[in-house]
Image 1: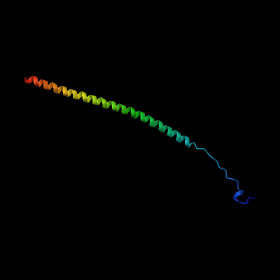
Image 2: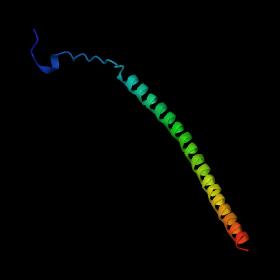
Image 3: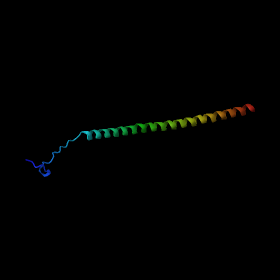
Image 4: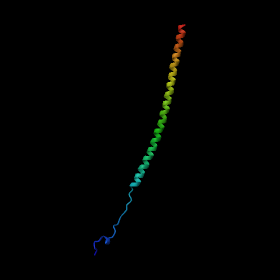
Length: 84
């Protein structure tokens, strides 16, 4: 008959179960990293397109300014010719 003392009791059995949660977390982190890299490359390409658009607009502005100056010079020449 057991005496009820703690020394006489058998040690409790501990069961260790592995959860699949860590692999799910790893997969989610890997997916988030892949999406972040893809987003970076997509926005970087758009940034390059925007810079090219700005250069094109600047060149167009210079072209427009040259036309205005050319028209003003033509008008001044016509005025001088008609005045003489």
